Image 1 (cartoon, rainbow, N blue to C red):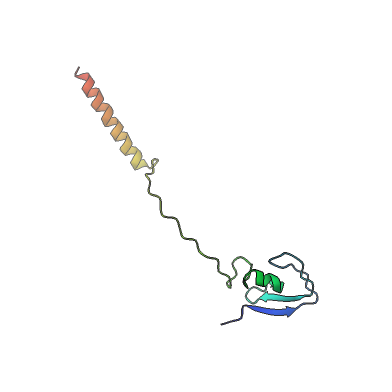
Image 2 (tube, rainbow, N blue to C red):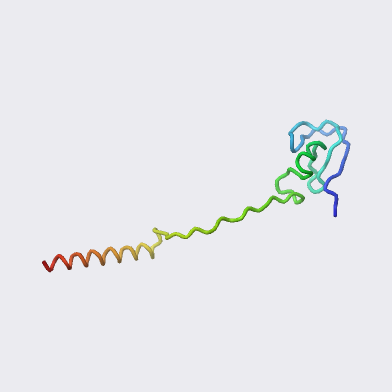
Amino acid sequence: MLPLLEAYRFADLSGRCGVCQQTLEGTALTVCVNCSAAYHPECWEYNGRRCAVFGCVKDPFPKRALPPPQRHVDVFNPIVLTGFAVVVASLLLLIWHRFSQL
């Protein structure tokens, strides 16, 4: 198993911590070995010893389950509209035929 972090001491680093967004001023830092993002050791522990960079391979984000597919009739589908039109025309023809016999 590869180590998830490396400790370095930088004297002239002027970046920001990926967790607390405070400046990194020559303190002992924890660095992700995959993407080289630097963190304060306390911030690394606070974040569960995981990288805070989105998409870092060392911290795969959990996949959410897809919702179940919705079953519904697409009313604006041409085939469905044609079916509705045929039903309405049949009903109108039936009503006209019934009333024309009176």
